[in-house]
Image (cartoon, rainbow, N blue to C red):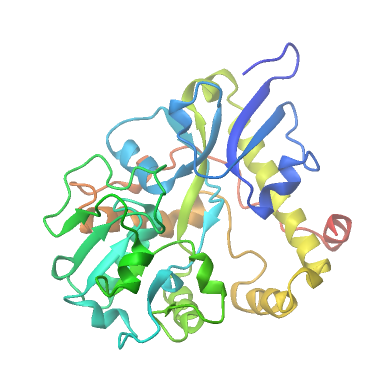
Length: 336
């Protein structure tokens, strides 16, 4: 951190649209000058001396906390979260159409300990498939991607192996050497009429709505963290930054609801989302993310990503004022 009178906070975040008001200075953090570097991928906050905090993998953060590593302080602001039913892809000619059918399948994924893939494997487990009955291969979605720790730092199960150099998930799936791939991001050709791939589930939105009804949450993937020494120097920063992140999200939603012509069916999607989820499908706050955090801790242990049960209380130990006040009609109009 730097600055004589107003401390400067340097954060590394991907440019999620709900962060843009904060990134552009439209939303301010009282008492601090926040400078955000837009990143193409999730930064390793601890490895970068120039960062005071940033976007962090939920899985890697939870594992560090479980190991007693408190060098990062997590804010209950999950800037990346989403259902995982949509993340399973097959070839268009595949007979597979459900997670229940994946026993004995050859499944490729973009990273073994990754948060999103952990949530997707949880769906496979919930469908009654033993993860030990699946042959897992870990590698890049497309050939040439090298900027990721895909295997983690812990021993892998015997049925998990890394792809060879030059291989990719899309290439192996197209060639028929994989039956399914799990990916948080769709390959470019998925958006073309002649794509070789489709979703495993014929109606993933219906499955996702059912998941919401059963669990009450949308899975968290990445959260915002701050370095411990920064928090110790400025103990008011976490709560102040969290409030600004909430304000940024609220402003973004107001603008999105006003300017719906950016995507042909955005208005329908926003209306349906409000009907299903209420005013906020991605709530911030420790209490409102407690069930999701506990479920994730349980999955990391059940899947063997972490060897011991994880106490959810160690994950987000900081107390923050909540719930955040619902925006008034005047505030919503102002945001728009």
